[in-house]
Length: 391
Image (cartoon, rainbow, N blue to C red):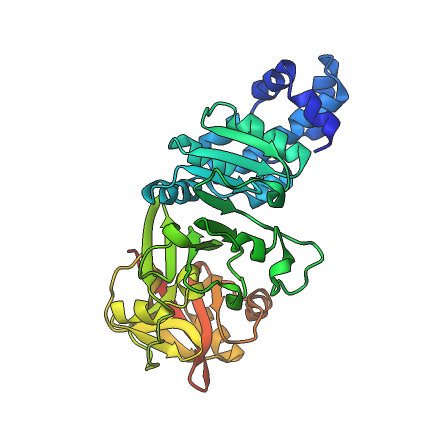
């Protein structure tokens, strides 16, 4: 967002106009919307600002629900913002640890600070970018316990705080993200404090960068791994070095361990196949999950579990194995055609196959839907016809 657009938006007229617009829908005629607002006498800069915000608010509903209609966003800030239910869990951890004065360094649009203020934590939200800081100030204006400072994280006096929260940005020039300097502020800065710290990072972080003694918590929402949070000091739970927090359908479940769990032994294909949640895989807790399900690994290098007993779990998607085939294109085309399959979901791990290309080559014309898992079992490539099991 340009500074001129922000100035036009952050006026009583701008906010009233934005709030008066109908919800942005896919297929909204932008040209017509611009023309309508211009005919009403609105400045073109304001028109551009409110239409951009209307579109961002609609997109933000996936992360913020009904709260999105009262907030302002930037495109980059929305992309990086923590989902509100996840931010609420983060905020609760500070409160439960008895930490009440928090510096949110690199607050973006203020999502995490908003969740902290909502439970009466005193939060100072720090943002370097002028436009983003102004938007954070708007979003936090209703919360007396929150304030916004435009500054670099490294320049803030931290002496009055109990704890820190950071969401470092990836430097655009970084290639492998394996160097602490690949983030801004750097990971050396993020973890170089005596204060308890929570640091939100990408789930694919090089594990060599995890500080000793910290708790690493991978978070998934509706089977999508959205972040890794590293907790230190009083924010790290005793005896928990690895955590997989799985949020689905508004419910949260967590699998924890002191360290990476040893993998389960591989074995023969059973009646059921389990696909562990990505957070469990990232946290390297597949072995603990397998043992809790009385299951074993289909292959020692692939994150599929199998067993003969169905055990309900929030940490994996369960499938009943209908049939096993060799991973051979002609065989699969014949068998799926015989079953009248026309719509095929393909899941794959451990095989170099593009599902979209493979599906097209099968050229299925039937009326039924099916799910096919392409993987390996030992030295053999296998194709498993499976059915989802409701849990």
